Image (cartoon, rainbow, N blue to C red; front, side, top):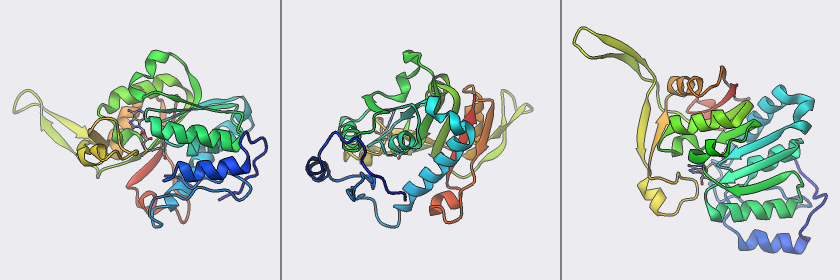
Length: 264
Ligand SMILES: C[S@@+](CC[C@H](N)C(=O)[O-])C[C@H]1O[C@@H](n2cnc3c(N)ncnc32)[C@H](O)[C@@H]1O
């Protein structure tokens, strides 16, 4: 991963060190510049997920916006501690807004903003279910690791579609594909189906206060074809599954977790 120098840090080195300790445990391995880092609490065999996602997101965003990125405002929906919001800010987006429902994660994200001094980064409280009401459109949105933690995926994707001006990068766990045919009103009438939503009960993690879960205990996870169909019905005209690079995190490499670019 790249290394950064804190250019316009608001916090002193001592304040950053103290904040890193006080706010531990961290979910992400932040590079805060000048050799200051957070240590991720995820197991070492999973830590590769962060770099894989970052590389894939940056590849898609760079290919689409190129030099225009400096004129682009972004919304990172379900931003957690702000890892990918910071990555986009460092890539040169004009302004990146991180939206996150959990106060304890927002507190860490705010600290990251202050520690890095990123002038084009802000965080606020909010959830995807009520995003459309804000009626604000961002050329670029990120919806990473959130879809399979929500109860109503169509409502959420419609809201993401409404908030996206040009490009949305979505990352989600996917379940195995299911296709078939079902009776539809009478024995002789049938309809084909392509893709499924699997119901997942996250009650245990939710009750344990896990900061990565949804804000409701019952959630659903799409199959790849269901994901594509839902995106098309959410206002996206083109959907592309992004190819993981050589050496990608094992779940991306095996297609159990996908990153999709969706264009309006
Ligand atoms: C698995 S984490 C993914 C975080 C980050 N986007 C990433 O890809 O690393 C899921 C995040 O979504 C947030 N979240 C859960 N339900 C949400 C909702 N309904 N609206 C917005 N964010 C939500 C969680 O609080 C958590 O920060």
